[in-house]
Image (tube, rainbow, N blue to C red):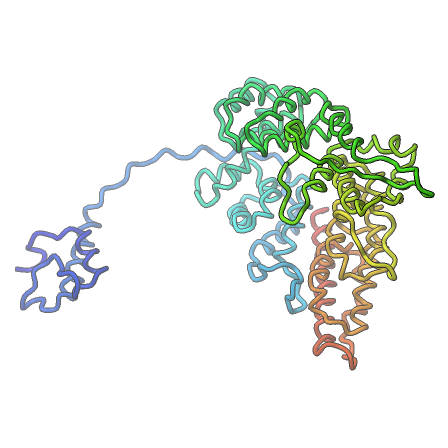
Length: 534
């Protein structure tokens, strides 16, 4: 009897026998003279079953066609810019960062893609329909691309994401567009707030706050008690947009929340309101700890840190337990000074300016803790005068580079041009080894003084035969941040210098490659910007 004449074995049984092997599981078929080999018999049976399964396949029920993609009225980029975008999306050869030890003189197109997307967004363009799948694939692989990529893709990104599970991230991030539409309609906003997904609700709250802070607060207040703790935290963070005195009663209520993170965020927001009751309470506590001591020949700052963290302090956002290696009293002092308005200190110190206050001696080795707390307060309150005073002039080369707090964060408070000049002076005095984080705080493209200082410092390192790989990070920043107009000035540095007696082996060839890559990248960036400008 042939296989086709016998009862057909179940497909699942054939698959199981094939996976386990005929030596471990007997095939669900009879074997004899016609099929002495169980493996061959199994394959014959699978072939017959395959034909039978295909022949007996029933046509699937037709599904309704998807609704047409929404219209996007924004203009397309010029033809040359569209061709450039296709090239950038098709380049998958350089997945690492620009610079970072990469060899060769060719620019990394993958690292130019974020700049193209940002520039296209500034022009108000939309993505060509043909590149949308590749654009969404790129955004799926690189989260740093998602905001600009989805903005360029527009509403069609959400439409495509509903058809392809691999692009599901666009449904979460793209909800800002739908939420933005609802934010303009109070009735639609209430409906989305009651029925929407969490990401939609966060985007909606942010959008409503941008239009009408009071309406956004009303939405959140209505459901606050029913929200989960982790959701309350993110909703509360969305109140930063449009933060004002009208938010104070709600934030004061949030200080009693059962979640410690929610309480801390509410306290941070209240401390950013200089006239809030919490700011006054923190000011009273800070003033009780810090005073001007006039008993000596030269006035100095006297500090008496708290001896305990009482419940009222904890309610106002002071964390009682210090991190490992930190004393309790210095931990509490730092939080009190950080939460107090910076405007209280000039009167406390006899009308002195922030610069004069920072210059005062601090008794009993409390200066690092006090100045670090003032740094955090300046960043939180976006106070440029205090940030400027705490930064001071760039340290001179002969002095030790001792940073109090986070200089990069303090720089972020200053105007863009002032930031660039300060970092340029720092680079000129100290070179690039200490300046990497400071460079990252400066606006792109770097202003002319900063760009010139970075190029000069790289040239000095090149001439000195310094170990070139230690500058790969700065080279990567320069490729992304230097003004493309500097390309011609860098041309002479692309030549291969002779390795001196003290130079690292192969340093000359590396420097030549790095500068060739830098020049070609700058010229490519210039071409991209020109193409986008049409």
